[in-house]
Length: 146
Image (cartoon, rainbow, N blue to C red):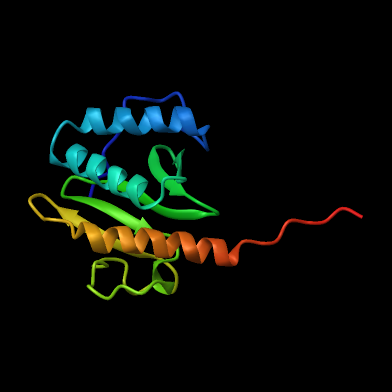
């Protein structure tokens, strides 16, 4: 599958600050201009509803990333799918079976969404919240100064 390219090159490498990352994600959604942009926008809104404190990043030459105490998930767009990859998906309960891709790995799990497919919004928000809880539980305590 070929990955969609971006016209925005100003932050092509590395991490951006949250504000510019949000603008870059806005640009990606607009640039796609089809069902993939609509779906990425909807997924983004659901992530923000599930975790109002989420931080948006733009990494790896143009991948939207949502973080809270670590990476929650990424939102990649390909010709035939919007792929939502959960960084620690293998450790999350998925009672309704949203994960349908990257099922063989030890750490990540993904949801491939094809044109016309509906997203179980309630289940997706539950996965987002579970990923945030998992990240928070693995967060290293702050070092104390003597």
